[in-house]
Length: 167
Image (cartoon, rainbow, N blue to C red):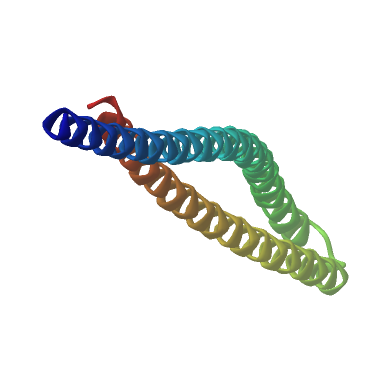
């Protein structure tokens, strides 16, 4: 009877240890599930940020295209003004030779050239602004790439952790 009593005690002890181990495993499983939920939320946040970056990049591209079109129009208008000024200068030279009011017409040409120089200065400023915006777009693109790389690392960590939990 003592032998059976001792065996029962041993079995009860083993049962208690198994129950304790089962509780520990249940807690570990709860922690694992909690971490999975956290990772899912983090991945959803990452996806949301990626979507926001995509939209921001699309807006950036749209604005860049608008600036390109505006610059093309500006260049076209500048070429028209250059051609118009060339035609005006040619006509002015013809009028100067043909007209005795040479000095008066020369003053008008000086004023026209000042306007041309002013427009050229405006075009230089516009080009500087275009270059500044292009640099801003490059920096925004670099920041987008940096964030995308960070998100890739987070995804790799998530995949790694999922692989650990699947085992």
